[in-house]
Length: 320
Length: 320
Image (tube, rainbow over the protein chains, first blue to last red):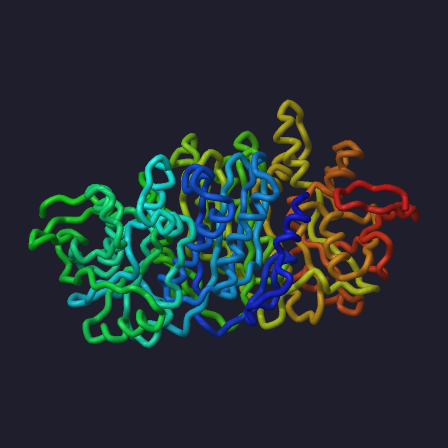
């Protein structure tokens, strides 16, 4: 199959987004909308971001698009379009590549997203670069710099699961409780689109998706907002069988494991009920894990039994 | 320099596009416009699409963005934003990477384009994937499927120069006339944005940029429009010193050399004056090279002294 036949094979039979004027098949795609337009790009390289030993081709596609959609979720945006650039080495066969696109397509379908462009080139290392485009209502894009002193800090879901899944996949001789659950969280992350959109009525909420670990994401919010964030270690939500891992693993994975694609946010206390309601409506686990304080020497602190330590971006802690 | 410092170093000091609400520094960028939005992605891999033996890092960036802007030009769009995903191998040093971004930045400045996002990852092979975003007025995006029987076929500039430049760069022992000109056309292509935009008043024009050679581009227009195109071999414009190359080289390069990033188009005869005026206004060389006929057995034919041959996408010809 040549490049053109392959592109034809991934070209949608029909498009779902009514704002699309021209999809795949010209020099560029064309769309039109009066909404605010949100766009981001994320790239995944074989043996850097994923490996065939822990991922089927289908999961590689699913997770790559999932990570991108998570960026849109963190902006409160509704996912609409994606463009895929793929570098294909000789050792990848047609059927595997089709599985990558199927993984993307399955996740995209959940959001009625259309693939509207891309590029297919050859190279030494499988590389998938995805550009996503989404919409928000006017001035409703959720940014990092909106945290304020006194805000509640919350997070969706549970943290550390993806890293636990990766650990299980790379230690196959051992048996673990709920191992399919953890592996699923690693291979098929579900971005928190519905929850973020259910926050729409809020005037102000800061949001970040947990792609690099909560220590890093909290730091980004704190720095962008010129505040500091105090997290409560014991309140950080983990899965019920997470205690089967060593204390060090739990600590590392929940604070800096990353790739859980949960949402970390801060909101004014008087708006907390709106956030709680959004979580109920969208069946989303929601936990208060800290609060926002005046800008301090360090962006993020973590408290355990009233001992406050500095939390570095990497998840490393030391006494204040 | 770590990833974050590098991203900071390429982050613009200020943005030029007034439609931009949020640039680099959050999970995604945000913009707003009532115009039609045009977007495309193109990827360039070291030793596949370019080589350090014929390109300085600056040119790699310039040409990669140039090829992308050319896609916007072929849609009649005004270039506005770009996002850059780059895979960086260990053998590329910081200064070279900065030069790549400088090359992009210099070209982007000509169009007041803003870089609004990207990703920086490590890998085995330098890979640059650029997403461009541009605007057209409502329903003014120029597509391939608008050619009609009786149309004039035209092309901007001269063809084959980029391949001639590449030939000169890879045959350094020889001397050629105008060699800086040809090398410049290869390393720093100038997309035909102004010319395409000057066609704005036209109700209908089909456009394609010459990225893969005119034989291929003409074929794409013909197939998308359900017509056939007849090109006149002697009318295909080449540079004045192009006859220093062998007849075979000239023939091959002008028909399928590609990467000249000129515009190939078709327009109704009664609109020809508008096209001519657009060329004059934007100081663009413009040549009539053929005409559109009713859909025939093959999409593209080429005529030389009244002998009509079939022109394959690859530039290969055989008698009808």
